[in-house]
Amino acid sequence: MTKKKTIGFVILVWNSAGVINKCLKSIVELEKITPYVVVVDNGSTDSTPQILQNYIAKYPDTIHKIQYKENRGTTVSRNDGLRLLMKVNLDYYCIIDSDTEISDTAFLKMIEELEENEMYGLIGPKMRTASGVVQMSARAFPTLLEKIYKAFPSESIQAKGYAMEVQKPDQEGMKSYPVDYLMSACWLLKPEAVKAAGLLDEKIFYAPEDAEYCIRIWKSGYQVAYCPEAQIIHEWQRLSKKKLISKMNWEHIKGLAYMFYKHHYLFTTNGLKKNSNENIDRRNEMHILFVNPPFKAEYGKREM
Image (cartoon, rainbow, N blue to C red; front, side, top):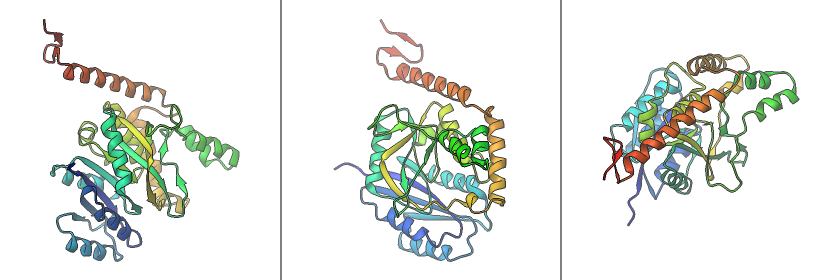
């Protein structure tokens, strides 16, 4: 009998009573995967804490909680969840939103792709709403020009901005393929990739923590991949889209400025991708060095 894979889930909640029940139900009902769940509550004031307590009482070995008194954003909260996962022997880590519903089928497909593609460090599924609306979860790294186009009061110019985000496979029919970055609503990660890239950058409160982290996954010598054959439900509560002027939008703008400064790019990602690909090539060379039996890795020369 094949041993079940173990996946540690980090779920961030904040007044999520309307969605968290379906999310947790879909996780505890997994049959071919063994879940270990850490729910981080960012100071919910609705019935979320009671819902969580009911699940913890029913699944005390599976579901665990970190409680905050106030909203600490996405990065600090998720990092605390990841730190708990790192203390447990797990095959994979998963960062997932509270408004998702998952299945064995979707995660087994992503696990298969991670295991068949050694360079993949992070993979994500196709996401759609319960009504069938597909979301563009795989995107090109954001640039200032793209953001200007999307904010411009012209539908034709906005369309150019949205077109700049599109990521396509090298050929049709691929089970999975590398992309710049994925929305963090569902990330399945190899622990070694997290160790190489580090945790989320806590200088970013809300966004674009997903794009920034994927940049570091690439720079650490791994690839970010999209698996359209794996599909989950995501109801997509976009906080920054609800109000034009809001704290979340302001935090998003600050996060973008910080990311551009940190990674030394603004209008083009050409240099960024070049550096990332060089790191992947270097990692490939190191892999060949360490796994090819005729060589002594410590000397880097062939045995006679």
